[in-house]
Length: 476
Picture 1 (tube, rainbow, N blue to C red):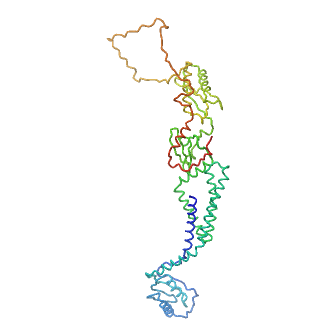
Picture 2: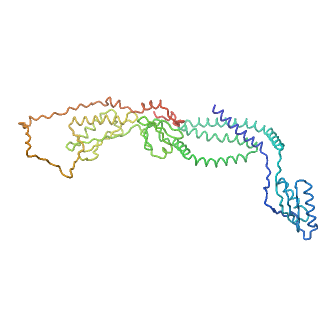
Picture 3: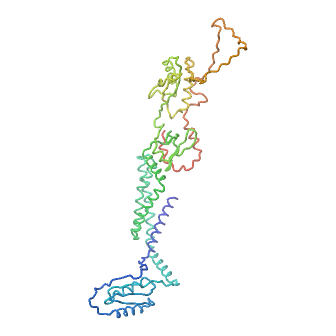
């Protein structure tokens, strides 16, 4: 349906151009009403001894002008061969005719034309009927051209569509981006249609008109380009992104301060789905200009945990305990490198360790893995009596600590001390920590992408547009 509509519009456009050519009537250039005293030199050479006298010249010219009936109240004077014309006429043609007559008269040196033009009001419909008749005749004469346009332009349009489809089919195995294939195919198909249009214009004799239209379209394109600079910038950015392909559908990326899974890309913006389930539209120009972090480019990702242990414990022992927990977890990979536990810094009350590990970012969620590993590391350190003190805080009293003593108050009774240290019993807190690789709260550690994709499938996204990332671009 759209293809037929485009063909019909192209045909209508050609018919309009041909009709304009048919009704185009050469318009004679009219002399604008000149100022009084327009001087015209005589075409013949000036004789030294004139044969005709000035009064004879003036009388002869005036008699001829009065005989035409075009010049009421005409007055002609001559002095030394210079003729002065004064009076009124109804058109510029009549005014010019009087000037030419005087210039061609014998022994006239120059003509000063002071005849004014005052058009006569004609209430007759004959000029309008005459113009309508000319239009009808020109229209009938243009019927063969209109038939030619009705035949050539649809053929040129369908030929352009066929060429575009053939080029897109040829590039299917060479160019991955469907948007880039479409742009290349349409660019190659446009000249095919322009050839048909040029044939029609050439037959109609409107080649210069076509060139003028193209020149005007170029100027208009510059103006429109400045007016819609952002739209053009986003379109070009989408074209460049389709060529470079820094990400594909389903990749988890960070760009312009935003993070999310790539859902689609149109000619204006790129759509991301954040971990909170929000749809984020980022202009393609912003995506192209900013740094793009693609977390899904490689299946493996590296993360780290920060753990603080007391100064009274063996750092090597704590490192080995933490490393063993990471190695034994099913989500932690041995390649490209086994887990490392390094001393990061010496804090005020703890020795801060940083544990690095690799995992499959497509299969597991980084948030869930961090939660599970921190839980298991804390359990293992407590079981091995590794202290994890909190931060030390220093309280300063600028004015000192006030002490209030009352002499009359009785001294507090001192509790009796036990006889030996064996009698002191300090209850130890009972800590029961799960040793499972993942708890119910942490789920099964799977990546949130699948659940978010199911959530996004039912969302109504405004201005989603045509997706430039096809299904073939989706990573397995």
